[in-house]
Image (tube, rainbow, N blue to C red; front, top):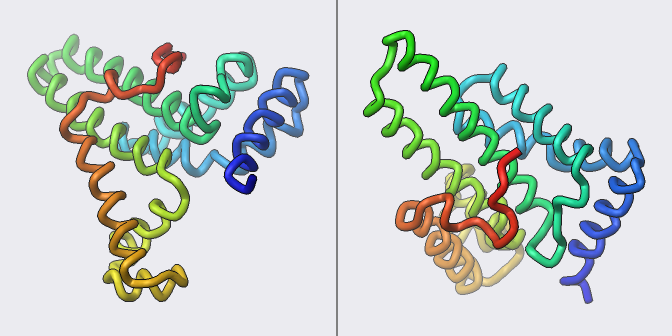
Length: 192
């Protein structure tokens, strides 16, 4: 039953948002704003643009709470997908403007969007991973822990730490083998 708890929270949050509870939006913002901002910044590499995407994503969620379908996945995954879609949209707009003014070429735009899409896909995969895999990867790669230190920090066996890291890396490797658009959960393909 502990596995059901996050989805139960997701369903209740969606219901509260659908009823127009401002406090629910505040809770959702507190829980996911840093994730949304980080994902947007990773794609756009611009603090102001990431702030704008963060506002747009939470505005969209407030105005369209029924767009989230708990049967399709977690609220966290849906928010990450919305963020990546909106950030890529903003990147395309900015680059199209740069092409129009002669500051960039169509080839440069295509390369930039492909790199950003791969980064967005990797971020989406990490944000969608079960917490134990995500925690192992964060310790190993952001805090530079080896598998033994990761095991100790997580309170698991070394074999379990290796398994989590291996599975997490396998999931991440798919970020470069499949395009972002083809990987979205069913029903989550609409942009903001």
